Length: 167
Image 1 (cartoon, one colour):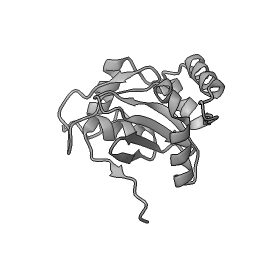
Image 2 (image 1 turned 180 degrees about the vertical axis):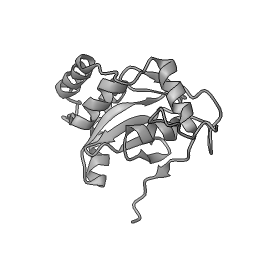
Image 3 (image 1 turned 180 degrees about the horizontal axis):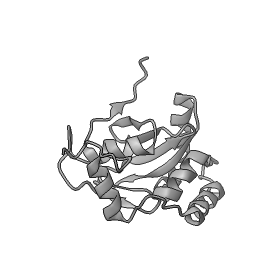
Image 4 (image 1 turned 90 degrees about the horizontal axis):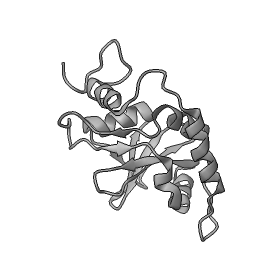
């Protein structure tokens, strides 16, 4: 079985399921207390320019299930190198304006989710519908329609779609 295929027993591709379990995730994991601490910290933060974060239900749910996990792929990538990451919204604490700007461009609200930890400085963000993005010095990237797809994109080394101003 290939690392990016799914088994009947899991909602994730094999490599993603393995990475999640190695990091301490298991089905039913739910740490709402930590998610609420992060939500309160983000809500309380105001940038020097007066920008504030929007805390979204989609983000709180993702933090509760995956928050604090440091994930690395157990094998090679499908198209590109897999991307290790951490689910920790405070990695985007000082990016309230950047995330708000992206949200305006996409006609939605955006909240920090975590960070790619491969040294790129890419911040992960989630929108009100649960779609996940990566923002780095090379541009903004669409990782998937939900956290599950985003994790699969990053951990299986699937090429993400670049966000552009064209249709």
